[in-house]
Each structure stands twice: as C-alpha cells, then as structure tokens.
Image 1: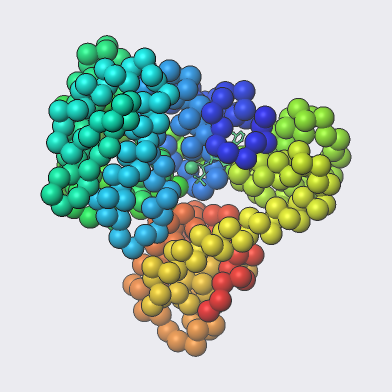
Image 2 (image 1 turned 135 degrees about the vertical axis):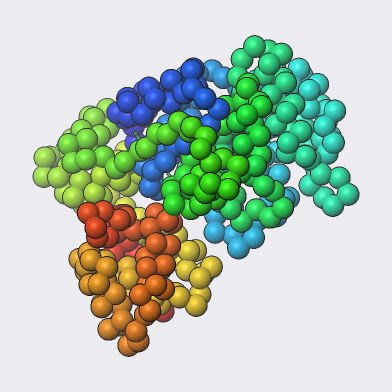
Length: 373
Ligand SMILES: Nc1ncnc2c1ncn2[C@@H]1O[C@H](COP(=O)(O)OP(=O)(O)OP(=O)(O)O)[C@@H](O)[C@H]1O
Ligand SMILES: [Mg+2]
C-alpha cells in the first residue's frame, strides 16, 4: 500500500525513487565503506534505506536514532540501548546466522549472551567497546563471505553523545573493516556534516570519498501521480480539483501526502482529511520546532521571529533581519543574526537558495503561529 503510515519496506509500496534506489543498491553491491542518505524530514529516507536493505538481503543492523532527538546530552547507555535493540532484531530476523554471529561477539568485553539474544553493558565497571564490536562484526562478515550493513538512521543525533569519537571510529572502519558497509541518514544535513567534520581538514574523515544519495520533495507532477496512484490502488474516487488542492497544501512533502492518503483509506472524505492532516502536520512541526527551541532558550524569540518573517515571504537576509528586529524591538548584531539563520538551515527548518532563504516546509508558517513566546 502506497499510503501506509510507517516507513516502507517493500519495493511495491515505495512510490518512484527509482534512481535513488538504484544508487543505494549500487552502493551496497560495489560502493565503498560509507553511504550518506540525505534529505529534509519526511522525504522518505528511512523508507529508501529499508527497501534497499531488504532487496539486498544483506544482514543489517538499523539504529533508529530519532529517539535521541534534541536531547541536551546523550549518554553512552542511551546509545548502547539503541544499538542493543537493533542488534537483537537482526538476531531474531536471521536465526540461521544468529549462533555464528553470537560466537564472534561473545568474546568482546561487555557482551553477555542469553540464548539467542545479547546484552551490551554500558556501566562504568564494564562497557561494550564499540571498536571491538565493529571489528568482530567485520570478522563475522568476512567468515561468511558477505557484507554486513550498519545503518545509523538520523546519525546527527549522535552529536550529543559524550565520550565516543564517532568520526574516528568511522574513519577506522573506513580504512580497516572491509566487510562492513555503513549507512548514515540525516534530515539535518548541516548538523550531520558538522558532526562528522567531513569538511574539516584536521578531522579523521576528511577527504574520504562518501557515497551520497539525496532525496528531495516530490515535484508537482510526481505529487499528483503519487496521490492518484495511491487513491486508485485503494479504489477511492477522486476529482482533479481535490488532488490539486492536496498537492498545493502539502508542497510535495511525501510524508504529508502519504498521511492524507492514509486518512482517505480510513474512509474520511477529502475535505475533512485535508483539514485534519494539515492541522496534524503543523502540530508536529510545532513540536519539532519547540524541541529545537528548548535547547536554545536564550535566542528563542529571535528564532521564532525569523521563521515568522520567512512565513510572510521575506527572503533576503536584510529583509528577514529588519522584520525580526522590528518585532523584537531590538537590534541583532549581524554576525549573531547570520549564526541564527545558519542554525535553522543546519537543522533543516530553513533552506538557503538563490542568495536568499525560505522555509523548508511551508507548513512551518502555521507551526510558528502555535509557538508561545
Ligand atoms: N516514495 C514514497 N512512497 C510511498 N510512501 C512514502 C514515500 N516516501 C515517503 N513515504 C511515506 O512518508 C512517510 C515518511 O517517510 P519516511 O519515514 O521514510 O521518511 P524520512 O525521510 O525517514 O522521515 P523522517 O525525517 O521523519 O525520519 C512514511 O509514512 C512513508 O511511508
Ligand atoms: Mg526517517
């Protein structure tokens, strides 16, 4: 079903994305050690990852790091729990390999085995060493003659993880662990780049070739085709006007289009579905924006006024600044103002284009109205 609400896993449920999927499959077959899947929120990164992995049939561990989103601090335990859960999922899904894989892991410090499950320790006295974990999974893959994929979904959320040099670990894996394939997805592309320090010459990952796949929103034509195909698949009657209205409201964001479709599957008429899904989308965006603002309380009202300026159509740096200053009744030093804008860009709320700025998702305009100052 094209309109099911969870990230897709099967090719037939994923609309279009032929080129991106082909690229991901090529990476899994012949690519180097690390792949980045980049795109704003709700573009279908997790879906592309899952569909591609399933088609490849390679054993894979997928860490859903979204659960760590916007935490001011991520402890080693927080991360290890996510890794542990993802790893046990692999063990339960690939029973034929589980025993062999456990044999490789049980010698690693901080690993306890119980039946066909493992427990990773993260306490002060005894903790899993990530480097040893990577090495043993690599050795396991080598012994089997295939690659194992470690996927970090929303990898930038690890930026708040204390005590682990993740960039150094990735560089080590890149150079030495030939049987691992590492996939990093990110909806906050700027933050992901900063976290990996890819552009920093003093960083361990600098200069490494990374396989990159970028997912964008659907254009108007694809949005229409997506809706029509999904509605027809569920035998739901629609008019051209309705489809146009939905496309206009959701601006090509695959996740919102899919949510609207899911409402229609439940028998909700067009007008009610559109209204309810728009409201839900802006509430979710307001929640995400609030999470971002919670970590930056001192500049909260500045951020909100910047978003409101963009919502009103301001595009140029000076226009946005002028609006925000008028609303706040104070001057913002130019350097600070640029930093604020860049933070919003790095976090995927704002897009920089043609020398100006715009909201990444136009529904953020509605979301910004819901933020209390
Ligand atoms: N090409 C597509 N075909 C069908 N459904 C899609 C497609 N792309 C996205 N979706 C749907 O949109 C929603 C968001 O997709 P997904 O979770 O894969 O995106 P994402 O980029 O990982 O989002 P997030 O940034 O929130 O993690 C899901 O309900 C998914 O099923
Ligand atoms: Mg995702």
